[in-house]
Image (cartoon, rainbow, N blue to C red; front, side, top):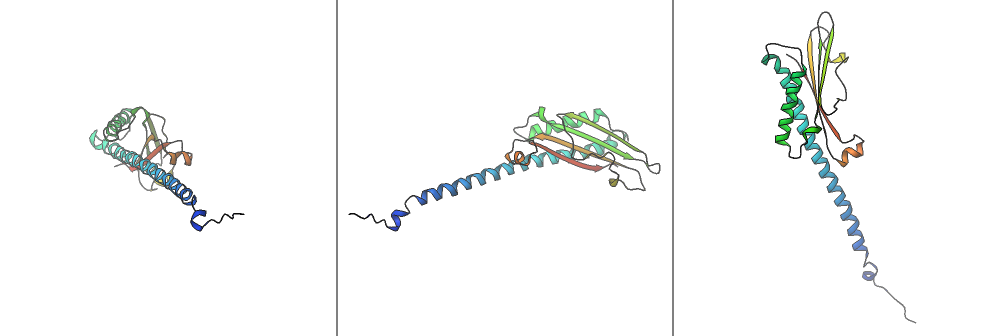
Length: 179
C-alpha cells in the first residue's frame, strides 16, 4: 500500500496564490476609495473658494454701487453668472445646469434691534445647512451689523458621499460680515 506523504512545500502550493489575491483585492479597494475621497475634496475646495469669493464680491458691492446696502436679485444673478463662468474655466467636467447658489443677507439695526433678512436663490435647488435668519448669536448686542452668507451647491459623483447618505451634493458655505 502506497502512502502519500506530502512535503511542506507541496501542502502550501495554493495558499500563496489565495493570500496574494486577497491582499491585492483589499489594496485595490483601498486605493480606489482613497482616490474617490481625493477627487471629492478637490471639487469641494473649488466650491469653497467660489463661495468665499462670492461673499467677498457681495460685501464689496457696497463700495462699487454707491453705498447701496440692500441686496437685490440682480446682484445675485450677476454673482451666479460669475461663479458659473469661473467654474466652467477651472473645472473640466463642470455641468453649469447643476450649479446652485443661495445668498442670504441679515441685518440688525442698533439701538432699535430690528431685524431684516433677504435671501435669493439661483440655479439648482441649494440650501445651507443653517440659515442666518434668527441666529442672534452672530450679532453683537451693542452695534448694527450686516452678515452675508453665500452657499454654492454642486452634485459630485462619489462613493464616499453615497456612504454618508448625503445624496452626492456638495454644499460649500461662507459667512462674511458687511462693511
